[in-house]
Length: 150
Image (cartoon, rainbow, N blue to C red; front, top):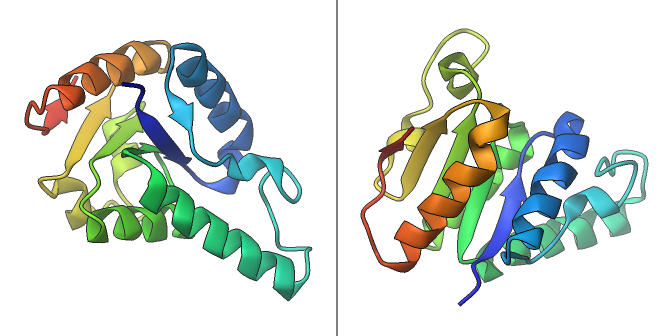
């Protein structure tokens, strides 16, 4: 069984999001929707309201259709909405950050929902992200509890 995933991060991380998606897809995971393909590298600010609505609904359905939500921190406003959609639909979430501070807001505050039982936090170097995500995915398929991963 291949894991179906939705990848979330802030729009400014679109290039890294594409790199991660290509590596996960190459390893057999299935990306349900690639938001970086629309607009200007994922940014739809310049597009009309009709397109923005369609993108919002497509992204919402992408999170719902995925087996897991993979988050690259730090995320933006949309990332946190996607986390809420995943939690509301009982989806496991794998949040990656290169540094612990990337899991906090600009003023240094924690995000409580990063500690939800459906969330696994992974703090590691970029070059270890895919290895850790794939290992987590294997554990997920076997129903091993989530938590801190590093």
